[in-house]
Length: 217
Image (cartoon, rainbow, N blue to C red; front, top):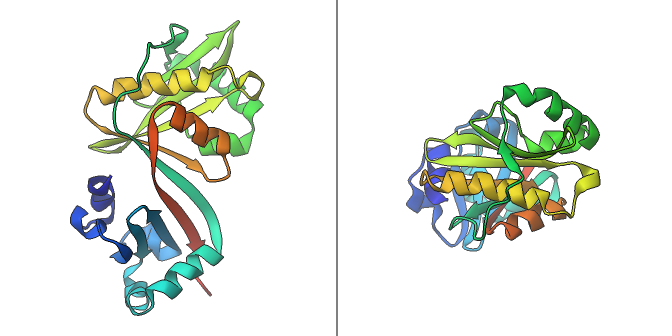
Protein backbone atom coordinates (compact mmCIF):
# COMPACT_ATOMS: atom_id res chain seq x y z
CA UNK A 1 0.00 0.00 0.00
CA UNK A 2 2.79 2.41 0.90
CA UNK A 3 4.55 1.71 -2.39
CA UNK A 4 1.34 2.45 -4.32
CA UNK A 5 0.65 5.73 -2.55
CA UNK A 6 4.31 6.69 -2.62
CA UNK A 7 4.27 6.23 -6.39
CA UNK A 8 1.07 8.26 -6.79
CA UNK A 9 2.35 11.09 -4.59
CA UNK A 10 5.92 11.03 -5.86
CA UNK A 11 7.55 10.30 -2.48
CA UNK A 12 9.49 7.42 -0.97
CA UNK A 13 7.20 4.86 0.72
CA UNK A 14 9.20 5.18 3.95
CA UNK A 15 8.07 8.81 4.19
CA UNK A 16 4.49 7.58 4.61
CA UNK A 17 5.27 4.93 7.22
CA UNK A 18 5.38 7.19 10.26
CA UNK A 19 3.30 7.82 13.36
CA UNK A 20 1.26 10.95 14.03
CA UNK A 21 0.48 13.73 11.56
CA UNK A 22 2.67 13.48 8.45
CA UNK A 23 2.68 16.25 5.82
CA UNK A 24 3.06 14.98 2.26
CA UNK A 25 3.65 17.42 -0.60
CA UNK A 26 1.07 16.42 -3.22
CA UNK A 27 1.89 17.77 -6.69
CA UNK A 28 -1.19 16.31 -8.40
CA UNK A 29 -3.82 18.61 -9.88
CA UNK A 30 -6.18 16.98 -7.38
CA UNK A 31 -4.36 18.63 -4.46
CA UNK A 32 -4.40 22.07 -6.06
CA UNK A 33 -8.20 21.94 -6.03
CA UNK A 34 -8.79 20.21 -2.67
CA UNK A 35 -7.40 19.40 0.74
CA UNK A 36 -7.27 15.76 1.80
CA UNK A 37 -6.11 13.42 4.54
CA UNK A 38 -5.64 9.66 4.79
CA UNK A 39 -6.09 8.28 8.31
CA UNK A 40 -4.41 4.91 8.91
CA UNK A 41 -3.66 2.81 11.96
CA UNK A 42 -0.22 4.47 12.14
CA UNK A 43 -1.29 8.09 11.82
CA UNK A 44 -2.73 10.66 9.44
CA UNK A 45 -1.23 11.71 6.11
CA UNK A 46 -1.92 15.34 5.19
CA UNK A 47 -1.97 15.63 1.39
CA UNK A 48 -1.01 19.26 0.90
CA UNK A 49 -0.53 21.06 -2.40
CA UNK A 50 2.92 22.69 -2.71
CA UNK A 51 1.37 26.12 -2.16
CA UNK A 52 -0.09 24.90 1.14
CA UNK A 53 2.78 22.75 2.37
CA UNK A 54 4.15 25.48 4.65
CA UNK A 55 0.70 25.96 6.20
CA UNK A 56 0.34 22.23 6.86
CA UNK A 57 3.85 21.95 8.32
CA UNK A 58 3.33 24.95 10.60
CA UNK A 59 -0.09 23.82 11.89
CA UNK A 60 -0.68 20.16 11.00
CA UNK A 61 -3.40 19.67 13.61
CA UNK A 62 -5.34 22.69 12.31
CA UNK A 63 -4.96 21.49 8.70
CA UNK A 64 -6.28 18.04 9.64
CA UNK A 65 -9.15 19.50 11.66
CA UNK A 66 -10.15 21.73 8.75
CA UNK A 67 -10.47 18.73 6.43
CA UNK A 68 -12.43 16.74 9.01
CA UNK A 69 -14.80 19.68 9.62
CA UNK A 70 -15.61 20.27 5.94
CA UNK A 71 -15.69 16.87 4.24
CA UNK A 72 -16.96 16.68 0.68
CA UNK A 73 -16.37 12.96 0.55
CA UNK A 74 -15.05 10.18 2.79
CA UNK A 75 -13.83 6.93 1.29
CA UNK A 76 -12.65 3.64 2.75
CA UNK A 77 -9.46 2.15 1.24
CA UNK A 78 -9.32 -1.66 1.42
CA UNK A 79 -6.52 -3.95 0.25
CA UNK A 80 -6.30 -7.69 -0.27
CA UNK A 81 -3.45 -9.56 1.41
CA UNK A 82 -4.16 -13.10 0.18
CA UNK A 83 -6.31 -14.48 -2.65
CA UNK A 84 -9.95 -15.09 -1.64
CA UNK A 85 -10.50 -18.49 -0.07
CA UNK A 86 -13.11 -21.02 -1.19
CA UNK A 87 -14.38 -22.32 -4.48
CA UNK A 88 -15.32 -19.96 -7.29
CA UNK A 89 -19.00 -19.59 -8.24
CA UNK A 90 -19.79 -21.40 -11.54
CA UNK A 91 -22.40 -18.76 -12.41
CA UNK A 92 -19.68 -16.16 -13.01
CA UNK A 93 -18.54 -15.63 -16.60
CA UNK A 94 -16.28 -13.17 -18.37
CA UNK A 95 -17.90 -10.10 -19.90
CA UNK A 96 -16.96 -8.34 -23.14
CA UNK A 97 -17.99 -5.20 -25.07
CA UNK A 98 -20.82 -7.21 -26.64
CA UNK A 99 -22.43 -7.26 -23.16
CA UNK A 100 -22.80 -3.47 -23.14
CA UNK A 101 -26.64 -3.56 -23.44
CA UNK A 102 -26.81 -5.79 -20.34
CA UNK A 103 -24.62 -3.35 -18.38
CA UNK A 104 -26.65 -0.36 -19.58
CA UNK A 105 -29.82 -1.99 -18.27
CA UNK A 106 -28.22 -2.79 -14.90
CA UNK A 107 -26.88 0.75 -14.50
CA UNK A 108 -30.31 2.19 -15.27
CA UNK A 109 -31.82 -0.05 -12.59
CA UNK A 110 -29.15 0.80 -10.02
CA UNK A 111 -29.34 4.56 -10.59
CA UNK A 112 -26.78 7.27 -11.32
CA UNK A 113 -25.25 7.54 -7.83
CA UNK A 114 -24.52 3.83 -7.45
CA UNK A 115 -23.29 3.59 -11.03
CA UNK A 116 -20.83 6.43 -10.46
CA UNK A 117 -19.44 4.90 -7.27
CA UNK A 118 -19.18 1.41 -8.80
CA UNK A 119 -16.88 2.44 -11.68
CA UNK A 120 -17.42 -0.76 -13.66
CA UNK A 121 -17.24 -1.29 -17.40
CA UNK A 122 -17.35 -4.27 -19.72
CA UNK A 123 -14.36 -2.74 -21.54
CA UNK A 124 -12.11 -2.70 -18.46
CA UNK A 125 -9.04 -4.97 -18.61
CA UNK A 126 -11.06 -7.66 -16.81
CA UNK A 127 -14.82 -7.78 -16.24
CA UNK A 128 -16.93 -10.67 -14.99
CA UNK A 129 -20.61 -11.00 -14.19
CA UNK A 130 -23.58 -13.19 -13.45
CA UNK A 131 -26.29 -13.28 -16.10
CA UNK A 132 -29.63 -14.97 -15.48
CA UNK A 133 -32.65 -14.97 -17.79
CA UNK A 134 -31.07 -12.38 -20.05
CA UNK A 135 -30.30 -9.91 -17.22
CA UNK A 136 -26.94 -8.90 -15.81
CA UNK A 137 -27.42 -9.23 -12.05
CA UNK A 138 -23.90 -8.42 -10.88
CA UNK A 139 -20.64 -7.22 -12.39
CA UNK A 140 -17.12 -6.69 -11.05
CA UNK A 141 -14.28 -5.25 -13.09
CA UNK A 142 -10.63 -4.29 -12.66
CA UNK A 143 -9.24 -0.91 -13.58
CA UNK A 144 -5.47 -0.38 -13.81
CA UNK A 145 -4.50 1.91 -10.94
CA UNK A 146 -0.75 1.74 -11.61
CA UNK A 147 1.71 -0.78 -13.10
CA UNK A 148 1.62 -2.64 -9.77
CA UNK A 149 -1.98 -2.19 -8.61
CA UNK A 150 -5.57 -2.66 -9.77
CA UNK A 151 -8.81 -1.20 -8.47
CA UNK A 152 -11.96 -3.32 -8.06
CA UNK A 153 -15.37 -1.98 -9.00
CA UNK A 154 -18.65 -3.81 -8.37
CA UNK A 155 -22.34 -3.24 -9.08
CA UNK A 156 -25.26 -5.49 -8.11
CA UNK A 157 -28.90 -5.22 -9.11
CA UNK A 158 -30.69 -3.73 -6.06
CA UNK A 159 -33.43 -6.39 -6.27
CA UNK A 160 -30.89 -9.22 -6.26
CA UNK A 161 -28.75 -8.28 -3.26
CA UNK A 162 -28.10 -10.55 -0.27
CA UNK A 163 -27.77 -13.53 -2.60
CA UNK A 164 -23.96 -13.56 -2.57
CA UNK A 165 -23.72 -12.27 -6.12
CA UNK A 166 -21.43 -9.36 -5.27
CA UNK A 167 -19.10 -11.59 -3.28
CA UNK A 168 -19.00 -14.08 -6.16
CA UNK A 169 -17.96 -11.59 -8.83
CA UNK A 170 -15.49 -9.68 -6.63
CA UNK A 171 -13.81 -12.89 -5.46
CA UNK A 172 -13.46 -13.98 -9.09
CA UNK A 173 -11.71 -10.82 -10.29
CA UNK A 174 -9.61 -10.65 -7.11
CA UNK A 175 -8.49 -14.24 -7.56
CA UNK A 176 -7.46 -13.59 -11.16
CA UNK A 177 -5.66 -10.37 -10.24
CA UNK A 178 -3.81 -12.08 -7.38
CA UNK A 179 -2.20 -14.46 -9.86
CA UNK A 180 -0.43 -11.50 -11.49
CA UNK A 181 1.09 -10.49 -8.12
CA UNK A 182 -0.51 -7.04 -8.30
CA UNK A 183 -1.84 -5.12 -5.32
CA UNK A 184 -5.65 -5.19 -5.28
CA UNK A 185 -7.50 -2.11 -4.03
CA UNK A 186 -11.19 -1.85 -3.12
CA UNK A 187 -12.59 1.62 -2.44
CA UNK A 188 -16.07 2.61 -1.29
CA UNK A 189 -17.82 5.57 0.30
CA UNK A 190 -17.89 5.48 4.09
CA UNK A 191 -21.68 5.56 4.19
CA UNK A 192 -21.92 2.53 1.90
CA UNK A 193 -21.92 -0.06 4.67
CA UNK A 194 -23.08 -2.85 2.34
CA UNK A 195 -20.06 -2.32 0.09
CA UNK A 196 -17.69 -2.33 3.05
CA UNK A 197 -19.22 -5.61 4.28
CA UNK A 198 -18.78 -7.09 0.80
CA UNK A 199 -15.09 -6.12 0.87
CA UNK A 200 -14.60 -7.84 4.23
CA UNK A 201 -16.47 -10.94 3.03
CA UNK A 202 -13.97 -11.23 0.16
CA UNK A 203 -10.98 -10.96 2.50
CA UNK A 204 -10.11 -7.28 2.06
CA UNK A 205 -8.69 -5.34 5.01
CA UNK A 206 -9.36 -1.68 5.72
CA UNK A 207 -6.08 0.27 5.51
CA UNK A 208 -7.10 3.92 5.52
CA UNK A 209 -9.89 6.49 5.48
CA UNK A 210 -9.54 9.13 2.77
CA UNK A 211 -11.27 12.43 3.58
CA UNK A 212 -11.53 15.14 0.95
CA UNK A 213 -12.50 18.78 1.52
CA UNK A 214 -12.61 21.82 -0.73
CA UNK A 215 -9.89 24.43 -0.48
CA UNK A 216 -10.85 27.04 2.13
CA UNK A 217 -11.93 30.38 0.68
